[in-house]
Amino acid sequence: METQFITEIFNKLRDRELNEYRVTKEHFLSFRKVLVEREDFKQFRGIAQHGGEVIYQYLDEPRS
Image (cartoon, rainbow, N blue to C red; front, side):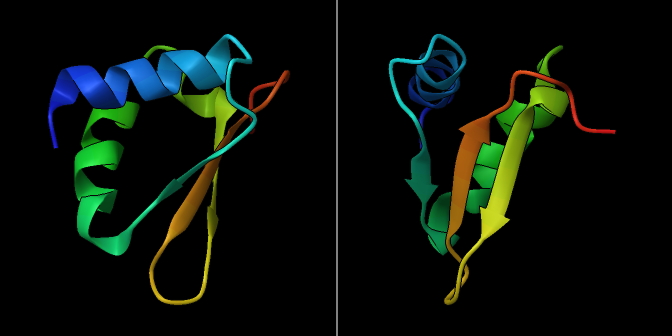
């Protein structure tokens, strides 16, 4: 997956244009690579789903 597209998804979550975004198992590593490079990465929550999918959400408070 393209880094620019992934960054746009995370920005839309941050800006509340999306409530959550589901990432398939095949794209998880691409999303994670972009996420850990962000300054606000602790404000994102990834919720593991059955089958290797992850649902990302943006939190008001950074996780510890």
